[in-house]
Image (tube, rainbow, N blue to C red; front, side):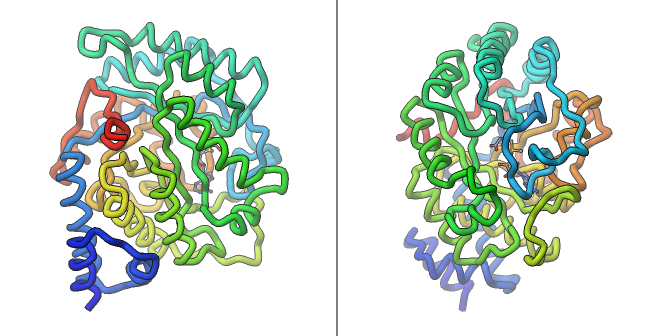
Length: 363
Ligand code: SAM
């Protein structure tokens, strides 16, 4: 019956909260394949078969935040802290441009001091300069993922040449948010940041962790409705993965890996079906739990992959969760490996392309 219901809802294009909860809760293989195929068809129709790459440069693990789930949170004293030099950051971006990766993501722990923003803005400008080519006269596309900042600082980073920004809500439930963050990190502040980023002119991405201890299917359904109400351009969601030095409330059990993965794929498919033409990433966390997790993500409706280009010497120190993949592979090995992986699910890489969200162009 669920299979027929999914077909009917996809046809009508009207997803209610109860429908979402029902799909998230099902184990019916036939219904799931119907969901996956519908999501893939929507992707091919609205976005196409091309997969966009963003070389992921984790340029610093220094962090002033204390998110209870995160391996690089401020109070994890076991992490050796690093910050890449300006030359290393620009060289990593230039390598991406040479490989034809159309965009880079600059990600780090959170810092809000003037020196941090000054340096980041300078690096954005330097990357833009250094990656101009005949095929990409404006240089690579730059996405930032450096947390909550002031409007002025977002504006400065945008003016420097970054044009996309990722800031995950982590959950759309204020109660669950409060459970996994220290009191001074506020749900409202993060939400306001997403609104400010949009006003400044960024293409805005958000996302949630899937399978957070204590999270309900209704909360996940509400996450999907939340993305739609914010009219977001990009989405990055992945399974929650425990980290040995994290500080999550011990009373809450973690769901088995298979369950978290299964939920993550359903969330990707439902996001594709409810949001249509946004960019959706098949995230590294999927690969951490399943060697072909990212490829499966593509088959459930994702269209973006963020290959690791963080220099190998520090990659281990940017460990958000246990079991991070590709710790030993150089960026070059990752590039070769990706081609085959993406072709294996009948998709192709859009080289030398920013791969902006179709949704952003339309709004
Ligand atoms: N500091 C910036 C911020 O907070 O947006 C960017 C870096 S932060 C480490 C990037 C993302 O890592 C977070 O938004 C979170 O969803 C994810 N993350 C952290 N710990 C995780 C865990 N244990 N399992 C899965 N994802 C995790």
